[in-house]
Amino acid sequence: MSMASNPPTSTLNPPPGTAASATRKAAKPAYFSVKDIHAYYGESYIVQGVSFDIAESEIVALLGRNGAGKTSTLRAIARTDDPQLTSGEIYLDGKAIHKMPSHQAACSGIQLVPEDRRIIAGLTVEENLLLAQIAEPIGWSLDRIYKHFPRLDERRKQEAITLSGGEQQMLAVARALARDLKLLLLDEPYEGLAPVIVQEIERILHEVRELGITTIIVEQNAVAALKLADRALILDMGHIVYEGSAKEVLDNEDLRHEYLAI
Ligand SMILES: Nc1ncnc2c1ncn2[C@@H]1O[C@H](COP(=O)(O)OP(=O)(O)OP(=O)(O)O)[C@@H](O)[C@H]1O
Ligand SMILES: [Mg+2]
Image (cartoon, rainbow, N blue to C red; front, side, top):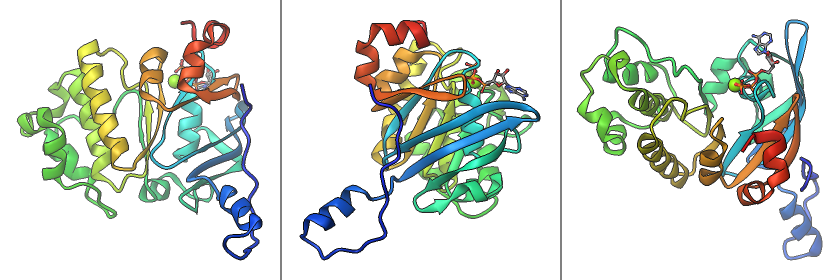
């Protein structure tokens, strides 16, 4: 077990090949870094000093009991108005996300797929995707999306709200890819889905990783999330209480009982 920590950063520039340069290399800032963030809904203090680092193209499962603060942490990272981020720092690929409103965080590559998926009623599948591309920066072309999501290709002219739950989840992920995506935040993507559909979404998320995109997945189905993820973070009462490999969590019965009910 290891507690969350941030690697030391250095501004020194030692000559290459020296021991000092090796140290500097090891201390390179993480691709995505959350440093001691605190966030409130009004007076309610919910995210109470969360810190972690994620490497590029890593998949990290953010787990914990109901009410632990998982959704709030994702929302704080995506810079939604609620909860309000009052202190701490968030960096993605060198950019200071904590200084941005949500639309700028989105333009910097952070896409949150919330639990309710926010499919737009009255629009077809294709119109939902086109709407995501209404403003720069644009990510995947529609052709590319349809190649990776054959079910959406078959249903492009269908009203999106009539899709099955699994197809709506695929559309929500596809819509994130239609933007210039660097960090995908998924809140309960498997909720209400049959195992066969969960497998199809897992396949898509593996493809997304191979393209170099970084993912944080929040999921009640901790076993499925740990199967997909490289690493796990466990939140409890607004704090990270455990950080380790997905396998370490699966192998640690006490931890699973205490925080994950599995
Ligand atoms: N809009 C809000 N206003 C006030 N308190 C809120 C709001 N949303 C969530 N909370 C509180 O913040 C805490 C963390 O909630 P959050 O939704 O982040 O938990 P979670 O880990 O995602 O839980 P779940 O597994 O049930 O989705 C809870 O105590 C919840 O009641
Ligand atoms: Mg939640």
